[in-house]
Structure formats: structure tokens, C-alpha cells
Amino acid sequence: MLKASLKSIASYIPEKILSNADLEKMVDTTDEWITRRTGIKERRIASENENTSDLGTKAALKAIERANLKPEDIDAILVATLSPDYFTMPSTACKIASNLGLVNISAFDISAACSGFIYLLEQAKALVESGLKKNVLIIGAEKTSSIMDYNDRSICILFGDGAGAGVVSLDNENHILDVHTASNGNYGDLLMTQRSQKSSLCQTLSMQMKGNEVFKIAVNTLSNDVVEILAKNNILTQEIDLFIPHQANLRIIKAVQEKLNLSDEKCVITVQKYGNTSAASIPMAMNDAYEEGRLKKGNLILLDAFGGGFTWGSALLKFGGENF
Image (cartoon, rainbow, N blue to C red; front, top):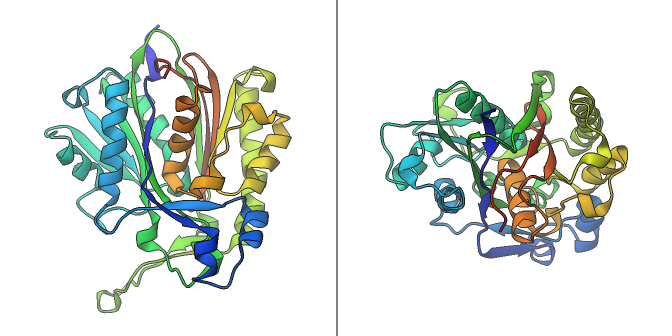
């Protein structure tokens, strides 16, 4: 039966490395403290002349090629980002479409913070299975450094830049089995990018987070969500080939991993070298596993993510791309 399948995965990683040692010179922190509390050792930072759309375009080109398609085969572009090129318009998706030489196709952004790639999978699955679209390009792209206050040690140590992309199309096998997304706006003020409501008071935007509160809610929510999606689909933990979570904090990842009783070999962790790249973190981690030969065609994958909003989600899928 023809159903939605993730036919490729790719990423783009900026060259510049911002290490914990570099941050020690910028704010009152230490490598030991950052590593112990988050698991992060370094993160990547885009250059000044690289926009979020540039990062996304580079990942997209590779994803299209790996799906054995050409840019003109794409009939929709969906982008998840919290650091768009422009404040409200044009969308980053429209900019990427232009970069790819595409016109007269659907292109739009979604705002689901770190859960963005899970939300994209759900939207792309619905679009292709309904027959509205054939090949949907989904992109998580972030230049979080562009909205970062590097005087705020509570948050600047966490985030990095990058992009990940994939193509969702119909196939007879290796389907996106299930996607679950949810939200609770009552906690919106715990993780946000604030703006003035008066045009005369517009100012530079920067992310703000109440880390301890976010951590507690994230662990409980994600642990319950992954258990629920497995139970709903009658899939046992031992059947999972790879668990690829949002790379926000090593302690959160380990808490969910222990809840599922998954071995280290089945858990993909990249937070130590990229930090939290928000909507880009899952596809970037997937691509690392893919290029290392850990992610193979037909593998059963469990994804999960939690982000500002609050938003969260999980997905079960069999990878449909050709082996690297």
C-alpha cells in the first residue's frame, strides 16, 4: 500500500566551532559546569553572511539528491524554525524555494520551536497521503546565534546553528507509521523570544528560558509520550533499531533512554558537538547516524522532541532512504 515514507536525510553544519573554553572567556561559566549540566562540549555558529535560509538550502540540496530527485520534483517546502531570516515575512521556506529556483509551489514556515521537525513529519505525511502533494521537502533550520544574548550565561551555552532536511514521498514500504504532536500554551512564558507589543518600542529579540522548570516538565512529558506512542502501535522497546531524540540536554536524553531501557548502541547522541539546534537537531542527529552507517533502510526509528510553547511530539517510522 502506498503511504508516506521519509526517503532521505541530510544536514548542513557550519564551520565555526564555539567551544566551552571559548564561552569561559565570554561569560561566567566553566567547561566542567557546562559539561556536567548539559553534556555539551561545543556548538557550531553560522557566519555573519549565512542566513537560516542559506543553511536550510544547503541541507535541502543534499536531501533532494539523496532522494534521487531534482529540485523541480519538489511540490511543497515546509520549514520549521525559531530563527527565520525575516521577522514575519517572507517566510524562510519561500527564501529556500527561491534559492532552489522553484516558483508556483507551496512554501511556508511553522513555529513549533524544538519540536518543529516532528510537526513537519506529521504535516508532510498528511499532504502526500491525501494526494495533495507528491514530494514534500521538510527542513529544520536554525541560526539561533542571531537571537542569542551572549551575556546571558543561562542560555547562550546551550544553543548552536545548523540545518537538517528530508524528503517525504509515497512508497510501498518503509512508512512513517505514526506521529504524535501536542502542546500546552499555559507554560509559554518559561521559554520564549519576547517582543514589544508597541511599534515604537521594537528592540533586538533574544531567547529567554527558565531552565529548571523547563527541564522538569520536559523529562516527564517526553517519558510519557514515547511510552504512549509505542503502546498505541503495539511496538515493544526492543523492536526499536534507533532512538533519535531532540538534542537539548544529555540528562534529559538519558532520563528518557532509561525509561525505555534502551542500550547506548540504540541511542543517537550528538548534543556534545552541536548543542541544542532546536528544530534542526533531530534531522542533524539522524544524518550523523546515517553517514556513520548506523541508520539503514528499513530501520525502525523512534523520534521525540520538546520545545517552547510548550510543544512536544514523537514519531515512529521505518527509514525509506537508500543506505549511505
